[in-house]
Amino acid sequence: MEKKDIKWSEIGFGYMRTDYRFQAEWNDGKWSEGGLITDDKITISECAGVLQYAQTCFEGLKAYTWKDGSIVTFRPDLNAERLQRSARRLMMPEVPTEMFMRALDETIKANAAWVPPYGTGATLYVRPFLFGSGPVIGVAPAPSYIFHMLVTPVGPYFKGGIKPIVICVSDYDRAAPHGTGDIKAGLNYAMSLYPGQLAHSRGYAENMFLDAATRTNVEETGGANFLFVTKDGKLVTPKSSTILPSITRRSLVHVAKEYLGLEVEERVVPFDEVKDFVEIGVCGTAAVISPVGEIDNGDEKIMVPSGMEAMGPVLTKLRETLVGIQMGDVKAPEGWIRKIL
Ligand code: PLP
Ligand code: COI
Image 1 (cartoon, rainbow, N blue to C red):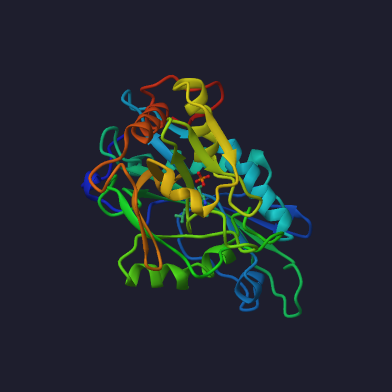
Image 2: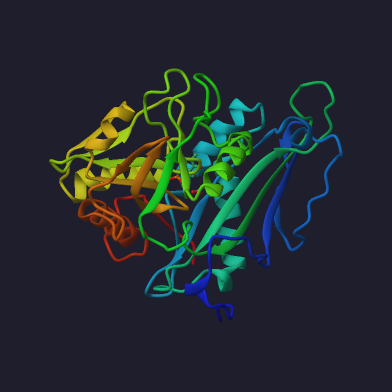
């Protein structure tokens, strides 16, 4: 199979229309079989639950081309599970794991020419989503739903690849206690657009959100969890019921302990402690691991000791091991890799 003629190493994190997508509909209490379609337009009621009351959630994962040309995905079972959790919280029907995996296999296989080749730094981003498509006018769950999975080739999420970024503490909150911060609801991202734009207009790559209840503890950014490294080389990552349980972060905790022999602490991280860490990064499917070089909180500027030139040594090792596993160059733990082709 011939790959598309694209300058893979130059692409950014954007949408490119690919050839096929998967779609299934939920009506009268059951899912249709679903299958591949070529039409990238979706027709729904003007009064659809998603349009009126933001009844929608999504996932994000990637497909990678290995050196031998095979195409794989990384821990998609956890994405299927998280989509089900999001669906339950938003009163939507769960997408069965069987359908999620079938959609994944079929969509990636059909778009194999769009999966960036090994060694280009680009990957195929997979975006599954679920939304209320049927009409509601009173506040209620929609009577029908669409599950759709699209794919698009992507490069690095942050401009400059793995150069350290500068972020700021947001004056806005991302998620309320007992709210929807721990699911991947579209509404969490809609409300982050304004603080995101504000941060960008002031020259910051991202926001650091603090916990809404006390505004004293670190939560996450708009699209990634935090990683911190202590002076004595421990990996610390915030524990909170209002952040998204990142699959990348959960995988890195395992990699840190089992591959690199690091001590790991998953715990509340007071913002006051941030100045004491020697390396800081954000992690997620899109971000992989991106280093943070500076954090501004109003007039206070925290310069991370690892500096603005490169990622620190501990995060570098974590990144190399994780990417090695995803790219087939490091042996993966049992069950982490799903081979597609
Ligand atoms: N936090 C938020 C708010 C996100 O949107 C994402 C991206 O999915 C993550 C964290 C990272 O999660 P994952 O590693 O599962 O992609
Ligand atoms: C991902 O990492 O997959 C995400 O969904 C983050 C998003 C903000 C691009």
